[in-house]
Image (tube, rainbow, N blue to C red; front, side, top):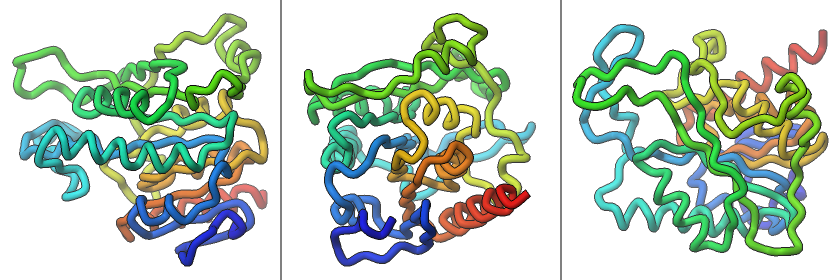
Length: 265
């Protein structure tokens, strides 16, 4: 895995199939080999931290996640999205793809940034949550969905991977639709530590199974607690994760090591 590094940077954690970086994502993206990544999954800041409130486990809590989830203006948010997407494009292989998750607070900027940086959107996935937190304000409909954009480079020669037959098989012999329904992340998946925006494992497993092959290299530039890495490891793919919070990188290490223990049995 170290051969994927072209600059002077050391991984926080490294095995034959995984690398984790505790650093600013922009710094690391600039120091990885171009065209070396088969698939990227990104769950970037949604910029939700606006001092509002929400409901968690029946309790009223702040929506603030941290300084990383704040933006002072629309232009700052959009420039941020264009910058990291531009760097990711350099790393994606000619036939590789990128998946980006978001809510209404950021996904429209993401979609525009993808097109501006030379990507073509393949699908607009709607993740419908069966157990979303209630709307405390009671001034609008309950927010129960997230959007996941799947895109490739806007190149007519690009032939992205889509394991159509496998997805059809997993959907009872019918074509799988672009609305995926399921629960939010279970407490069991947070046994090694909690991240405020952790995605459920089944979402990442479906993304990886549908658009990569065993042995492919997957990058998550905002990896948090590395649900992407756990799914990649279970499915026989290689993984690179980046996060600037030591707390979450340490959770990532614990989760990946736990998966290694499972593999021994």
